[in-house]
Amino acid sequence: MSAPTVFISYSHDSQEHKDWTLKLAKDLQAQGVDVTIDQWSLVPGQDLSLFMERGITSSDRVVMVCSSTYVEKAEAGTGGVGYERLIVTEELIRNIDTRKFVAIVRGNNGAKKVPAFMGSRLYIDFEKDSNYPIRLDELARAIHGAPAVSKPPLGPSPFSTKPVFASPSTNVSLDDGWYVQEECKASAGLKAVNLSGYMELRLGIDQPVAKSQSELLDAVRQSEIKAFGWPIAILLENRDEFRPTPYGDGIRAEISIGTSYDYWALRSNGNFFLAQSFFEDSRRSNAIFFDTRIVRVTESLMFAERLYQRLGASPDARINVRVTHRGLRGRELIAASIRRFLSPSRPASEDHSQCEISTVLGNMKAARVEDVKNLLSPMFMLFDFRQFEDSIYEEIVGNFERGIIL
Image (tube, rainbow, N blue to C red; front, side, top):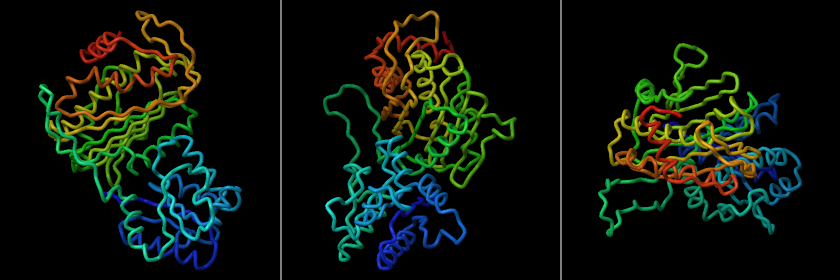
């Protein structure tokens, strides 16, 4: 597994404060964290603004050393700290629930321990030198995603009469730094072609696999569902510029043609990320097709089932699935098929919708309709409280599974 990357943001309060921050960077480096800090990463002649922007956007996590001076500069928008605030604020607006930014408090005797844009997020208190080893361990665990206390696996209900698959679950976090890194790459690609509306898919498994890049590529080949437009994790292996490329910890591909954009990545442990532009934008601007969304999420779940089967996961493996739709504001919910009538509704005022489920690999086919409904109902609700009967989901999901799209 590749080491998590961290950018340290701090203010040059004094030589003592700089020395303390450098020590923190060295200690994190010794604990398997790839640290970027100006004291060893910035050289004379280098563009400072570009260094800060790349450091924040490309790193898995950003550690903010919140001294009194740092907070004051962040609030006032002055100096390098003020510039970094603009970059951080943009990411926080785009993903309010992100855990990418970690505030630590050092040299701060003011009433405000963290900048206002960090809201009520928890911080780690490094004020007492006697507690340094404890706080360092806490910070390193947060970066590595290895909490000192983990939530125990969920047991079956003692009152259920339905058969269940036992799953020796471990925590599956879809906010891991790898997903954040891939999201940043996809966001840059979407911005380059001026697309704001897209679906994001994240998959994770509680029984991690360990596959080579060639094995990952074979699994994707066998998992494609070629029934609707560009499939999830599309493979265009006859075009050099669009072919999947291997990297240290997996494979990834980026395809951009006209108004269609796909970015996907598969990690050696089974993590999967996808960002796919809306098919709707090639048909009608400012619209979301409810039946197309049902088809796309159905395809996503079928792809996930096939993928983890081909990767050798056991039937009792637990799969976490997160579907996010971005760029919804101002769009109207309508039907793609002329066979379906949908009365007009007010355009969505919310810009994105996100929903996550946990399912068992061996149960995915049986639970498909319910899982699709659970992943999409919160988004449809944003369009003037729109809801659909179970029969609608059953029809569209069932037809797609049989290869029928109407």
